[in-house]
Length: 219
Image (cartoon, rainbow, N blue to C red; front, top):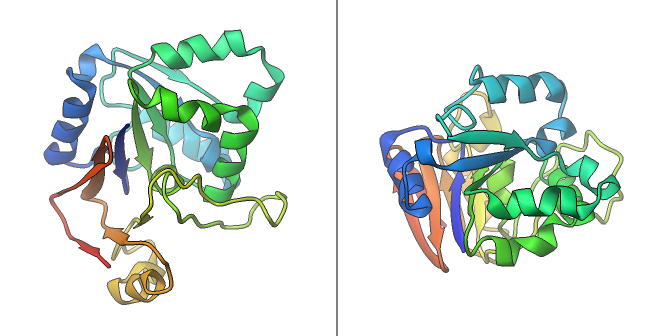
């Protein structure tokens, strides 16, 4: 399993190096698919998707200079024959999963059939998460509630027995102070990684490394 779980994208050279290490080749020689689905679960999601793809919002993600970049919209997949999208998914080098609402993303990961493919897929494809796209791979996810999904819908997939709390001490997220996130971490039964936007969690075959040019804490 090869994962690069970021708070905000490929925000510095150390995280970029970690990505190329997992890919086994330069980004310019790698193909990628972007999953924007989580972003539609928050207000103004359509415009945010456009800005992320164009590189007009946040740190580099879609606009890293990939050899090829496609979109994989999970809400469309249940109405499509699997032979139209599964081979494309299996052939890609990196799966870029954007941020937004964890519950919305987790629901569509399962409903689309992608969740059941992930264990086998991630033996060869690098999963690159951003915010909610990172959190859903752990035991902990959040929800903004801007959707009509059933209350019992899970907020994460739980592939890793940890929690990730992104955007540590970010000015746009006043609740994400170190003190507040430490209080939240104390309520969870798994280790919590509190990471700022200059930090990422690199996972290869179960081994976890923290890649950071910022600040982070393990609680």
